[in-house]
Amino acid sequence: MSRELFEAARHAMKYAHAPYSKFPVGAAIRADDGKVYTGANIENLSFPQGWCAEPTAIGCMIMGGGRKIVEMAVIAEKLALCPPCGGCRQKIAEFAGPETRIYLCDDGGVQKTLTMDELLPFAFKTESLG
Ligand SMILES: O=c1ccn([C@H]2C[C@H](O)[C@@H](CO)O2)c(=O)[nH]1
Ligand SMILES: [Zn+2]
Image (cartoon, rainbow, N blue to C red):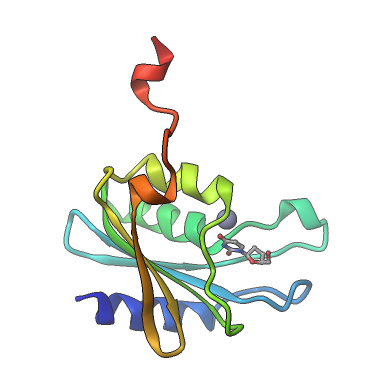
């Protein structure tokens, strides 16, 4: 199953708009509706206005009717793995559970698997609101 998600993330990466960093990233989500939603990073000449691959995929999931992330794959074109940035961790956590698996991939496939809880320990949760 994670192989299919890896392939989807790798395909999504081709749609990246990353002329400034030249660091294309792809993400793929298997959602609770059984569908796979994908995204790529979309940069902007006004640098802070660009965004990561993960929120593109999350936006597609929400608009497509998915509500929960069952598992997610992330891949970067460069050889190094792409652990989701801090902001993305918070965005993923909104739609994931502590055991949701996140696959960090390179061109060879899934290289590292992390749970949401490992990716964002001691997260800001509803209980934190008091
Ligand atoms: O979790 C991450 C981290 C970075 N990027 C993108 C943002 C930017 O376009 C490029 C270089 O930082 O990588 C992602 O898509 N996801
Ligand atoms: Zn990010």
